[in-house]
Image (cartoon, rainbow, N blue to C red; front, top):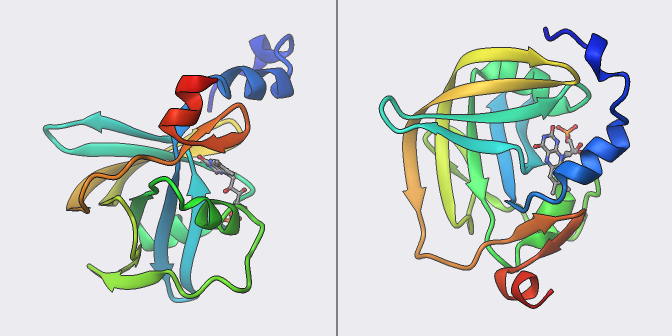
Length: 167
Ligand SMILES: Cc1cc2nc3c(=O)[nH]c(=O)nc-3n(C[C@H](O)[C@H](O)[C@H](O)COP(=O)(O)O)c2cc1C
């Protein structure tokens, strides 16, 4: 846990808005437990190390995904391309009942069929970080589709490369 004594002057909303100026890609994190398959939209993903191959994600304390990953000990990062915003909102707590099952089974995990790339990792370390938990993962499998323009997230809005260039 981190010392929070110095944080009283930082307003959480301001911090979120400020960090939101940092454009990110958008992923669906997936995992599988006895309870079933679970997906969650996440932008907090980072490539950490190439050798050994390590990545990390950050999961909110309030997310159902937290207990699921703790139980399974593994997760997949499914990277979205432009045009896949529907998945991003569906797995961010706004379920779309008309969405057909987007997953297929790969390496014992539910994987998004149309993902631009997929990174499958085993959890090697968990770090309690305030209202989130960081999961450091050792990469076990990679899958890439032909390169496609990415779905981006910036200042609370989805977009694409061209939209950001002309803004
Ligand atoms: C673009 C975007 C990025 C998000 N990134 C994260 C993230 O990195 N970590 C996180 O815990 N929640 C993130 N969220 C919020 C979760 O997707 C949301 O709370 C979701 O409903 C949690 O699902 P669950 O409770 O079913 O696991 C993000 C939401 C959006 C729309």
